Amino acid sequence: MWLKSLAAFGWGLLLAVCLVLIVFRLLPLAVDTKLFIGMLLGFCLWVAVMAYCYSRNTAKAASIVCGKWFVVTAVANVLLFYIPVY
Image (cartoon, rainbow, N blue to C red):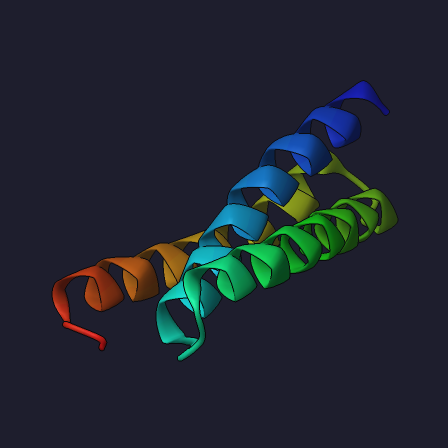
């Protein structure tokens, strides 16, 4: 159970940050509105990923799926960083 807790905490934090950064770059709103949405969405995503990790049988099974999602979101963040969005 401790391994699933560590995997859930780590992957939840990483995926929430990556997904909120994508949303932050794509929303055409004021900065304060983006920050407010990012805080609310980030916490909800973190909880959702943690619940998903706890629902898997092992920490390894959760880490494989979350690792794949992390690679996808990290690549999207890198592409969005180098593509100017106004």
